[in-house]
Image 1 (cartoon, chains in turn purple, red, brown):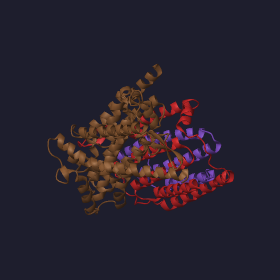
Image 2 (image 1 turned 180 degrees about the vertical axis):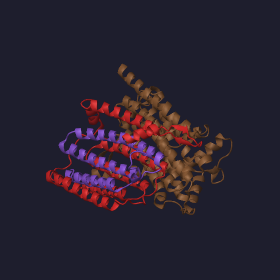
Image 3 (image 1 turned 120 degrees about the vertical axis):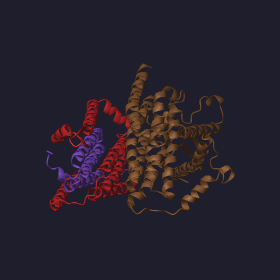
Image 4 (image 1 turned 60 degrees about the vertical axis):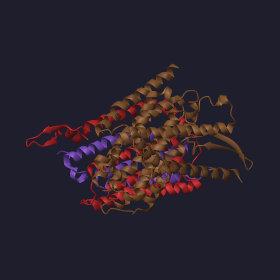
Length: 102
Length: 186
Length: 345
């Protein structure tokens, strides 16, 4: 018998999402900001899976699958961008790259 | 009962790891803590009977994405974050306020509707069920996802391609013209 | 004794037996590798400790335990100490899904027990292997990064790129096997090969899997992360005593697991063709099956050592070219061919 209420998972997801937001807002290192975004995506995944179980519907898990695909694509492109910026400016500190041109 | 204990262990690990990601000044350790969080989340997925997603989550996030992050961190030799910007104080408070607001909102709805709902025993998360759904009803999104991956791959290749040209003093430098244009658009 | 208690006890016993078997095999392998390298290079190998050098692993163990445990001053202490553990845990975890015998029914304390010769019979067994095997790289990366040393750092960088590159052909060659068996459960894969082993049906996939497994375990043609001549010791340059030996145990357990998986996926696992025709008593048949599994696995372990002392190391660009430009397209071709074969027959 499973004894874990669904709302436990939802609140855990909310906390993780909140921590991700804190990371994005407060950190200045582009890579750490990126990791915080991953954290937020994962919090959303947890919510999707909780609701998938609650509604007994597979759609939530399919959506998580799609989120993972998007996350993988995002990481590939995003890290390539960070490396390209580092080549130009020798920094990953977002305050140093706030000017969009050179 | 066992499930509840496991839930709390995984939840504490996940929250602790996520907190570490956000506050640790060293990006490499942040990345490792994020791996810990992902493992804890995989445990939660297993508790939610989503076995396939749990294992794919470990393979994709812990096995590939975070290795890539660590690779880039090591490649760029990113230093610890010592410099704080002028905005750091304000930003921090703004972030925490925003986070607490989010907890409150989502937590409120979470408590409201799902307090009496428990995790159900289903075979929803097995490979067979996911595969049947992916290759019948959701085959179009699945194919589009593959095209998205292809586009991302090409984009990453294009961005990381280094064009070398000889500049005046004989030093080699990245030409950067095209790369820069792409960067501006992003 | 209740059935639940008995099940838990049997499961715990299996874990203890399998883990200690793996560790004992690692001990034997350290000796075997040196003996085989001696044999291949026309020299003696260790022959001083015990009878013909048979106690050499014990001597090595004692040496590792009693050596001074040095932590260099410039390392990142936490990462440096964590790395051997991070390397060791996934290496031992992957063996959990390998089936080394058919299931067996017997009576114990009045209960009918079904004993699986496998630690866990996961319905996502192969995916579990792929995902846990991909975690083995963390030990190397963390060790390389935590050592704060340029050689270690280069070793860690190389290993992360190498592992990511070779996971893909490995996974794709496994997909072709899964297409044939129609199940991700390793027991079903073994059952599926009752008539014909997968090495006959999947020759290309077998070659790709073996090459990728060599790269994943950092064994010699692909041991760039620890290339002695250029990187001193690579990721484990700064490690000594038991921490170094943890890395070694992890490497050898990875070797055992991948040999066992090559056997399971391509060489029929514990199947012996034509054994059921002999109509032997069931216990003897199962014993022979387990023995067959061990013999096949030992052969692949030997193959690893044979290759180690036969082929020179790849250059880094050759490694990447092989992975991305030859093995990945070949693995995709293999999937297409397998699909066509399934559709036609």
